[in-house]
Image (cartoon, rainbow, N blue to C red; front, side, top):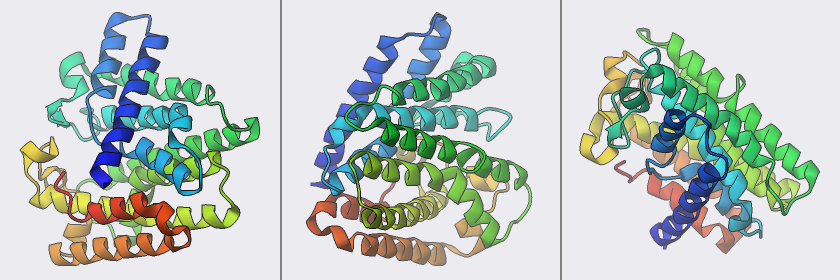
Length: 292
């Protein structure tokens, strides 16, 4: 059930993303190719899927919010392009393919990321089926999550933390920004667009925060235990970059325990939604058993 519904939502997102790229292609052909290369490189499409699923959990139709779903995937893809750059993590592979800068050069890769980020806000403002006030609230949600208070702020902590050990409080702050902020924005945005009540929004926000934590801890575990061919990028990059992780600050068994604890708390937050939250519940439970 989970994988079938996930695949269905992912296909909707893939088609919508391709249409957005074709609707207003970049004036420079190399830039357009660079954007296409990373945006359409596959992946789980987890953030747009979460946005759609959150809307459905509170009674909406996820497909109605594809513009916002596409926008958050554009923001996520831009962050991956920039994160892989030589000045950041200097990674050679992403999703089993050469990273953008390895194909198009660091300069063009930087511009492709910039283009996807700015295009995302253009796409957001094409969202219909919600009031102007709601659309603006979601734009604010996403911009805050992507900027210095969220993802970019977390990336800055990450950059400064290389070659040194940080404490657990700082690690959580880093990942709440770098990884958790966009998950939180995706889920809250879907709920807001579908007219969630204040109580429902609070419950889904709790779910989102624990989902992000479970995802990141599992990511740290996979960097140690994963298979490069399966996860689509080199394993052990955290060790090579001398980064603190949930595994290095605790242990592999303790990291697994913390991941399961976060999954349990996320599942508990969904209790008010009963059967409407089956997809979200199964998705967070899948996290601790995933291999990519």
